[in-house]
Image 1 (cartoon, rainbow, N blue to C red):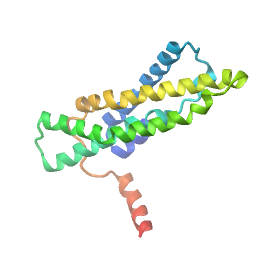
Image 2 (tube, one colour; image 1 turned 135 degrees about the horizontal axis):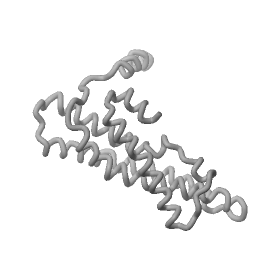
Image 3 (cartoon, rainbow, N blue to C red; image 1 turned 180 degrees about the horizontal axis):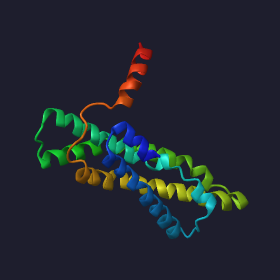
Length: 178
């Protein structure tokens, strides 16, 4: 669903696929984190996964890379590979710190769950560990793998104009601001 929405707004299936790759890899990070800590995965802990939060960092990075590449394509029609990689790195670094802090805030919101004792702690601490493991994995992926996949997959045929959904939203939103 997240990939479908991203595909609708960006109009690029490759960008949506880059974001979709982070979901199973973040879940792999969850299982690795739970195994490393020694906590078994259960339905309650895995049911707390919010895929929108997990892919949030990847969406931010892909959208910023997409924006930088589309703006550069308007000016430079024959962009060199070195220039394109520089733009991708700059775009990822531009949103790296805000992405890191947004994920850290979400992780910090789970700290009170770690302090629970007795039955509550046994029930809810695996959930907090699984969500935090997924968020840490998604953060690492969004700052490392996602820019790499953007450099491989977003080479050409990027739309330089806004799609019909964004244009329709602007027709409603801009007059409401006035």
